[in-house]
Image 1: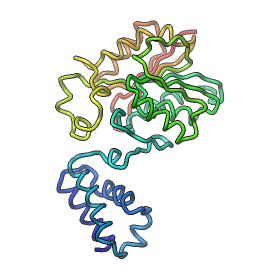
Image 2: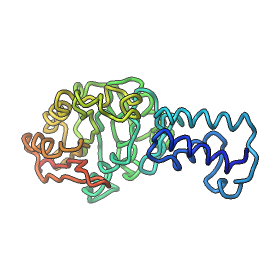
Image 3: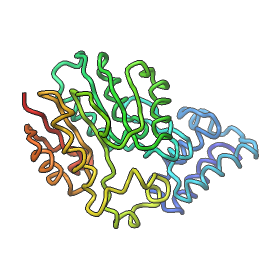
Length: 282
């Protein structure tokens, strides 16, 4: 078959499977399987695709039809302006999390300052590495309970030319951390335990449970982290946490109870309150 027919077949299969973005996902998968560019779908639409190559591409389409996320199939995911490799112990970065990056950058008066950052539950390293890519003189530490996640994050730092300014280590939140930081960020697990079974299969079956389960009310990691903020932050230091839908006010209260102020709640592109930002007093 030619490329045009193969693409149409892939899109139809994903549409039939109920995938939200069948055209986009089919294009990504075919680009990957056949080493194509976006332009090739126009300029090479009538090009013959060998049977073996078509079968390989359609095998990836079947994985997506079974609700495996595109990023998991490709093994990497774009986030902010960087490209991140995934592994089974990392949450797949999502556009909503870019709200945290935007919130931090908007609160920094001098992006060339030698800031020191820490990212708890770093996963792929997405938040820390995105910030370091915008803050040329900053350094950062990423902490994760999973050694495999730490391995992925360190690899992603090297992949994006940031290894000299980023350090990753295994750890249980802030236990054993005795440094102080200008900026604390986190996208911790925040799904209430009882809600995990109701999540979309792309999340429920492919993201690590450890990175999803926030305890009975979804707020347990925030309680742990909020209590550590007074000792972790320098005077005037900034914190920004991603939060789940309906959690922003509760998380803001937890942070405020630790004496932080100048609190802001920021929405993602869908209008959901997605990030709580606050500052330690001088």
